[in-house]
Amino acid sequence: MPAVRSAMVTFQSPRSGVVLSFDSTQHPIDIDKLRELCLVLLADVPTFERSRMLKRLRQMRRADDLWQWRGALFDTISHSHGEATARKRIAVLDDQLASSD
Image 1 (cartoon, rainbow, N blue to C red):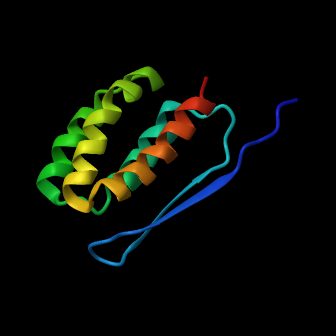
Image 2: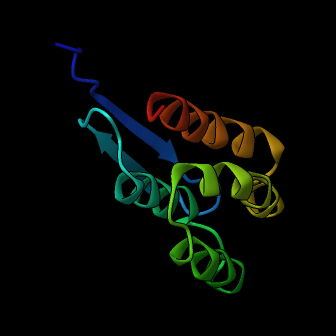
C-alpha cells in the first residue's frame, strides 16, 4: 500500500503579513485539491489579477491543464510579490502535480 502523503504548506504574504496555508493529506491528489492549492497561492494577489486567474482555474479539468496554466500563475504571482515568492509557490504546485501522476 502506498504511503499517504501529508504536507502542510504555509506562506507569509509579502504584502499583508497574512499567513496562507494548504494541507494535502490525499494520495493520489485530485483536481479539486490542486484547485484548492491554487486558490491559496493566489489568495493575496490583487483582486483584478486574481479574478482573471480564477476564471481560468474554473475551466481546468485535469492536472495536465494546470501544468499548462502554471506559467501564467507564475507571472501573476511574480507581478504582485516578486520572482522569489513566485518560485517558492510554483515549486509547491510542481510538487503536487508530480505526485498526482
